[in-house]
Length: 119
Image 1: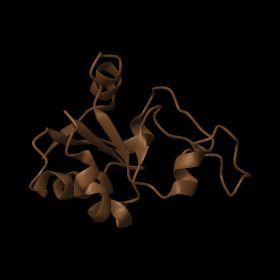
Image 2: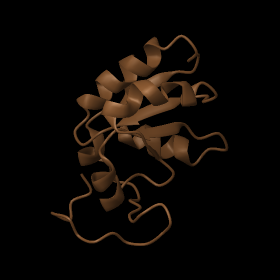
Image 3: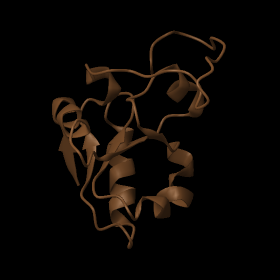
Image 4: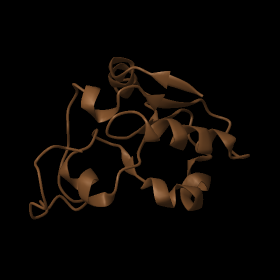
């Protein structure tokens, strides 16, 4: 399992075949702010959803500071049906300088449930 820089993730997201970005934070934190296009699969639910990633060409896991996402990447990589490269974004969202998308999946903003930080 390798780590990938936030800058490299930003570059890859602009390609025709961007990686599948898996944000492992809880839904409340995800709604506060996340990398545009990322999928929210909370770490505790990852084992039951890892099979959903078998069609991915490249998977990047994301968490607040890049620690838990290393474990998530190892879990995904160990799944028998995953043939794609799996990497953890180094430094997590605390190092992300790119765009942040917020709000619920349907586009409605959620009530403020704490600090405005995206993680």
